[in-house]
Image 1 (cartoon, one colour):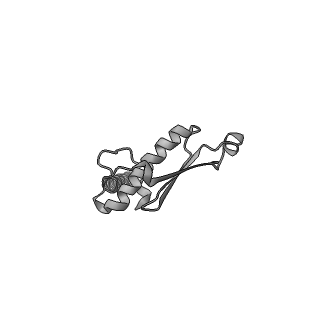
Image 2 (tube, rainbow, N blue to C red; image 1 turned 90 degrees about the horizontal axis):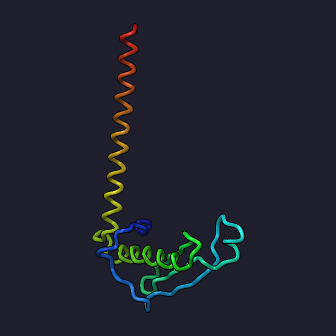
Image 3 (tube, helix red, strand yellow; image 1 turned 120 degrees about the vertical axis):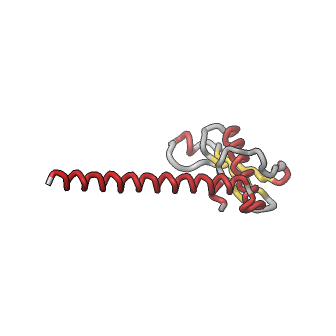
Length: 125
């Protein structure tokens, strides 16, 4: 369930107060060489009451990473407390349903094309 974080709609999410958060700045990992290895612009944000931890190193800017980490944490905390009633959960389910429907239609189209090819080959004989 907690993997659903990262959506951009923050209308009905639970609010976070700075007193509930513990923030650290650490060195990021991954590709990037010296820009990554020598600067502490990766933000680790922990929501103390729930114990949820978010690590954000999407940009080189500390301020942007702080903002993004707070958005992701807010969505994960909302999902943690509201469960299936959360807007984040509903968005995730709708997205999965849409993806499955698209996959189903693609499979049907592939079957139709295959059937059409077989009919054309029969007509040639």
